[in-house]
Length: 57
Image (cartoon, rainbow, N blue to C red; front, side, top):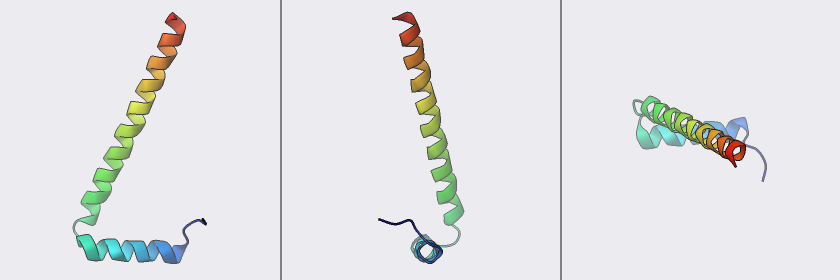
């Protein structure tokens, strides 16, 4: 499976605009960004807890 090229990304963007409308795209992107940020924060917290448990145990 190859990587996505410019043409594929443009098609995906066009389909997203058709499905959600131009005004909804920024809201969806904001929600996606917040979700990714929360996921990264949760991973960092888990790593800190694991490191603390190794020090104690």
